[in-house]
Amino acid sequence: MDSKTISLAGKRVAVTGGGGFLGSFVVEKLRAKEVAEIFVPRRQSYDLTQREAAAQLYADFRPDVVIHLAATVGGIGANRNNPGRFFYENMAMGLHVMDEARRYGRLAKLVVAGTTCSYPRDTPTPFCEEDLWNGYPEETNAPYGIAKRALLVMLQGYRRQYGLEGIYLIPANLFGPRDNFDPETSHVIPGLIRKFVEGRQNQLASVTVWGTGQASREFLYVEDAAEGIILATTHYRRPEPINLGTGAEILIKDLVTEIAGLVGYQGEIRWDRSQPDGQPRRQLNTEKALEAFGFRAKTDLRTGLANTLAWYLESSMKNSLQVHQY
Image 1 (cartoon, rainbow, N blue to C red):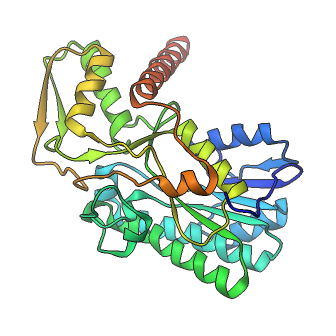
Image 2 (cartoon, rainbow, N blue to C red):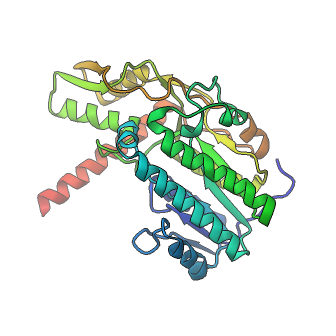
């Protein structure tokens, strides 16, 4: 591990995106670290796409550490339909949070979350951090990926010129409880869980899924990702980006079979080959995270999927009861 670490005890920590999927788990884990105070800026009060809001965040909370997780994200369809918005909002939020950190001048640590969408389309697997600049990202995710990649350049530049202590983390595809299950904007796992649950409940003869099933992905359980972020915040201080993942990939067709089995859906699975697969393969080399701050994912895919399904079913039942009561 790095020789110079920071303790979060007694620190004031701001988590942008702390009310979201990943951020909510990071906030929960921070509460166990005896931090002095945790601040979660909400978009209605702190729209970080506006410089003034980022400046207000620093003025109002006076943080020692900022963990920047706020992002405009979605699955392949959402990325394809919103390339301009996804580029602008992610670039603007990161730019403002970072530049206002420089102006603030009293930050002990800035943690920025990147994305595997920044890796070139045909990166050899497993993806090593050094491969990040060896080509252009897969087209459907490129605007989002390029915006996030640009923030790495900015973070490294600000470190060299202004001494801003910042680190950049690249998590694998996240999944778990509290994920976004909206069919228009969800990522692959919550999207598939919802499709098969509704297919079983409505006794559908078939369920259609996108692509060919031949692409692969690596999935990181959200609680493991949150733990990795906390470890990196306290133990990692190098300028180079670092992967957070499991180091294991699965074909989408095998993932579909796994989720359908867990749900208990027994109908036909149809592949809509007119829809994109996205990047052909994704699998991260995770050796540097293990060496630098001892991170190793603990939750296997099947356990994580079962937990995610259980949360979705419970959440759906609660929402149904609330509508009925109303």
